Every structure is written in C-alpha cells, then in structure tokens.
Length: 252
Length: 187
Image (cartoon, rainbow over all chains, first blue to last red; front, side, top):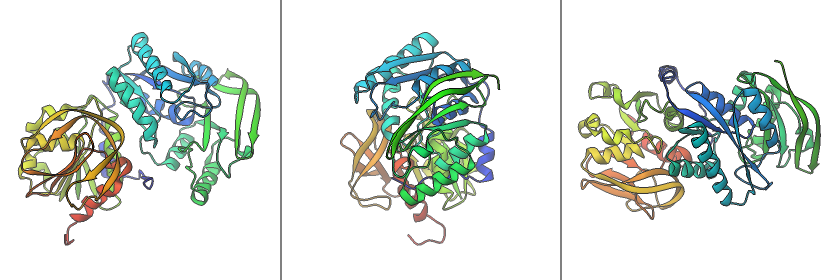
C-alpha cells in the first residue's frame, strides 16, 4: 500500500477549500452508518454541505464480513435517535458478495422512502469496500461520496477528538492489541499510543485494516449522548470485543 | 508551481475532497501547488504555472465531457499536462478523440504498451469510470487494461492522460510526472 498521504496543505489550498460552495446544495444524503468513528465523522462532514435525511445500517450475522461487521451495530438505533434521523436497518447473512444484494436493497429503500440521491460512506482507504459501494450506487443512479477518502488516519483521529467526539474502542483484532484496549476512549494520549504501535507493528492507527473497531457515544450533531449502563468484554489473545449490553440516551 | 484543475461540477460539493485533495497532498510534497475549478481556467490564468494536473471526478459527474470548448487552452498551453480519469477523457476529446461506454470500478490490472516516464510493466490500479477514451490519432497508447486504454501521451507534446486514479494506489505516477518536469531538471 502507498504511504499515507498527509493532508497538511498550504494556505493557498485552504483558501480554495473555504471558497467551495456550502450553501444551496440540493443533494439529499443517506449515510451508510455503522456507528463507528469513520461513518459518524463522514456524516458530520457531509452534513456541513447538504441535508442528511436518513442513516442506512447493515446488520451482518457474519463476524468475518469485510463489508459490514461491527461489534455494537445494535447501538446504531440509539445513535440514530440521538441524531434525530430515521434509520434503515437491513439484516444480512453477511456472505461475501451476497451481502451486496442486501446493501443494494437497503439503498433502494432509502431512495424510495426518503428520496435520497446520494450515498455517503466513511471509506478512507479500503478500495474493496469503496468499489463495491460505488458499483451499487452507479447501478442505482445515485451519487456516492466519500468525504474522508485518503485522509491521513492520525489526522482523522485527532480531528474527531478536537471536534468533541466521544469514541470508544469496541473491538480489537490484531497483535499486539488486547483486551486492555477495549472500552478505552480515544483521546490524544491513546492516539499517540496507536500511532506508536502503527510504527512498530505496521498497524493502521485508525483500524483501516480491521485492527480496531469503534463506537461513537457522543458527537457534535448528537442531541443527546449515549451512556453505557452495562457491558461485557469477550476477548481471547489479540482478538476481543467490548459489547454494549445496555445503554440509554442522556442530556448533554 | 503546479496548477491542479478541479474537474468537479459545482453540483457535487464533495468532489474536491475525494478527487483533488489527495492529488494536492502528493504534489505539495514536491512542489508548490494551487487549485482552480475548471470553470475558472483559461489561457490567461495559466501564467505562473509550469505544469498542470487535471483531476478526476465522481462517476455521475461527467460535466467536463460536455464542455470541451472550455479546455481549448490544452492545445497550445505548451506546458506539461497530466489528466486523470475525467481529465484524460477531456484531453482526448479536446484533441479530437471520443469516449465510449466502458465501466471499470475497483482494482484492475494494467499493462504498459510503450516505454514512458510514468510507469512500466504490469501493475494494479484503482479504476472508477463509466466511459473509456478512444484516443485521437496524435496520441500514443501507453497502457491498457483488458477493457480499454488506460494511459496516453501526445506524440509531440508533454500531454499525458491516465484513466485510472493514481492518487489512490499509484502515487508514484503523480510524483514521476512532477519530477520529470521540474524546472532546472534535465529530462
């Protein structure tokens, strides 16, 4: 894989970015939403430019799915409530390629029920995921946009912290990560530790290679935040999940 | 200084971050850069730049293919140009080629057909297009996939085009283009 691109652009470019249109965009956005930091951050970036009208969540029964599996997918219902957005929840057996039919069905429903014309993804590096979603959107005639595409992973983590995201690590799936990381909130210190591990062991610091999964408990567009009432850790060696068993929304 | 031309329509406010910013980030490691939307670029605005990169755009955004008159400056600008995806298609149309339906979305193998400064042999690329270019006669084909032409160069000008997106998995292609035409560098 190519070296990460660092988005530390010059003032000339920054001024071009600030002049890009941010008003009068008529796109209606459906966000592919897993409840982790990438899809939630992509939602926030997309909402700066156009109207988010629904969330689309694929609930996979296959723990090995490259496309959709995430440990606390059921929390997306609470997150959607916190965001005051309708959620399209589509079950999938998670069989390779067949799960794409389920994604197709979910997007089709979003087009029909919410009149979306654009799908937003939190893809950063994965051409596997990005290409498959592009194929479906292309077939359905809707835009596919990837606001975080090729973004530097450390910068991405730092931006979520700076913007007030409360994100916990809800899954670890690679050496030398272990159960000690599970449930930890992502903050500046934790980012430094992840970056150090990425340099030593070649991990992707934001988990782009599936090394970590995350769950967002609070973010700027959340009208309420999520409080975890009970949880359990299931871990073995360098693989484990922090399972949220019970949670509720509370005032911010 | 490099001019990166943003080939995204104003209709898609997300195109810049997805298709332009990754190129800028690669280019700025080597040289100063500026960005202008294609609607703002003309002969007069090119002074001060010594090379030009035309970005790609979203699959649904083919607006530049219908506005080739805006790109007449490509013919006589006399500067090295690299067009990426929509950028390559636009170059081809300006010089008299045409586009035809050809969909490739995802990683694909590309084979070098003619020795060049950007790449060699067989390599994997990220493709994202619904149309391929039938290159005009004054261009050489540099690379092809199983489906279509993936890279071209004008026979007499330093005008290049790649249909794949080098900013995704082949950033060295962008770097080689920039380095090959750096001022004071012997090619």
